[in-house]
Amino acid sequence: MLPTDALAVFADAAAVPVVEFPFESRYLLSTIYVSLYVSVIAVGLSTVASVPLALAVGFSEFRGKRLVTSVINTGMGFPSVVVGLLVLVMVSSQGPLGHLDLVFTKRAMIISQFVLATPPITGIALAAVTGVREDVRDAAFALGGTRADVALTVVKEARYGIATAVLAGFGRAISEVGSVLIVGGNIASANGISKTRTLTTAIRLEARQGRYELALVLGAVLVAVVLVVNAVVVRLGDSKTSAGGGLR
Amino acid sequence: MPIQRRAFLATAGTAATVGLAGCSSVLGESNGGETGVAGETLTLTTTTSTYDTGLLDALNKPFQEMYGVTVDAVAQGTGAALETARNGDSDVVMVHARSLEDEFMREGYGVNRRDLMFNDFVVVGPESDPAGIQGSSSATDAFAAIAESGSTFVSRGDNSGTHTKELVVWDETGVEPGGNWYREAGAGMGDVLNQASESGAYTLADRGTFLSMESDIELSILVQGPIEGGPELLSNPYGVIAVDPAVHENVNYDLAMAYIGYVTSPKGQQVIEDYTANGQQLFFPRALSEDPDFQQYVPEGWSAESND
Image 1 (cartoon, one colour):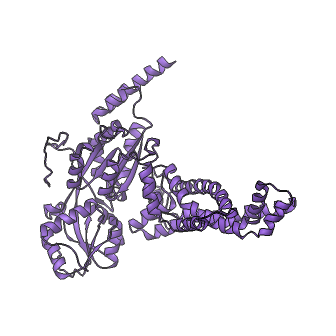
Image 2: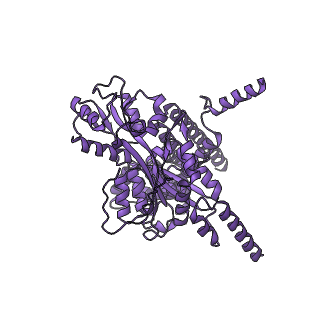
Image 3: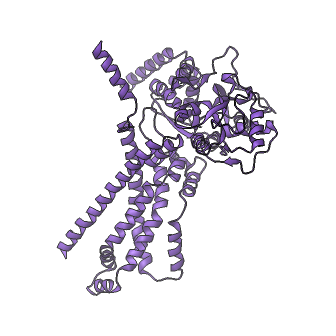
């Protein structure tokens, strides 16, 4: 009798969400996974596109350079909902990319976050690259460096600025809710595994239902994830410094 | 080897067809072919009320297991859900605004609409009830009193099923809502209930979402819907519609029809009947009726007079 009762009480306690652990771990983990998967890939692609762009714009003098710079800087303030709508129009089955069947997938979310992350990464990287003193460039050139060598030297000199750029892009991507909600659809399967639900859209879902505490718990998880990613990037930057120091 | 596999498929298909014969007439069709629906994904756009109450997860789990498929449920408002379907981005919609559904059908985007379930809307407001509508048996009288007293009313303002119903009630009341007391939130039901609760305002809510949030907010039901003997005007019927594959050939029509077959089957309807939140039933099955309303054939020049 007693053990059965105790078991029932235990089962009840397990069924009722407790403050310490209000979400099933597979729900939380799959949501974190989707957030990281989408943001990391989007920021990775964006970095690959942005840094050469920043170098190209930063090194060359051409008419309209100011205009290009202000377009990039304006892009930093581009509303994510608008980006989401534009991407939706592109990937919707009626849109130009419709045949790829991208709507409500992680890939569509990567596209929209790529669009969102590229302006801040390019903009901040551009500032960092422009900030590298001209004599460093001249020295690299004078030592017989090719254009690529000069570019590499500048990137090395500007690495902290570029790391900041990447982190800013990542911060924008992972904390963004408007576009991923539109193009991703905030989908989780009936057994609680996230498909296109990110931490931000999960927060949105809880807040919509007035479950503010749960939303805040998820918010804390998001901050923790961003903190860890920042720590990792900074650590990478530091180890690069020592490696670079050893070489030179 | 391939022949064996084919024989196995045929046997499995037959077994499944026999086993589930009562549930869906479509199943036989789709399993009779070489492919079947297993492993496919159904995209369902629906309203926040079916999703946020948790009904949809309860309803979709058995369906996914039965067919070996995945249901991607995207919770939007009724207007947005239908718009997504219009763009061919979803296979089936589950919504609750008859006038918008009829428009969708009339434009030719949807086929095979079925009544699914119903609950009702309730007028909720603060305990203090500044407009004095408590216990009113008429939604229009209550709305008139709210407008008359200039008490704050939060509208969904998002072209959702609830918003559509609210506008119908204002229309019947003969009041053009506007002015300082009328706030269009442009947000989902949960947000609006929170906002109304924070500012001591009235709003129109679907009973399901209200019940599932009742313990967290300081609002109470002031005018009941038809389930508790209130006016028929506040009824809230849900329909399920497949997207027409003749308009969007990319949609998964077989699976959409399997889904509609399932949710309107005795099994699906039982899930709806049994689903409770805080001990209360939220939705009432409607598909199983002695006089079923199939809505499969829409004649030329058919008009969409509301038939609530």
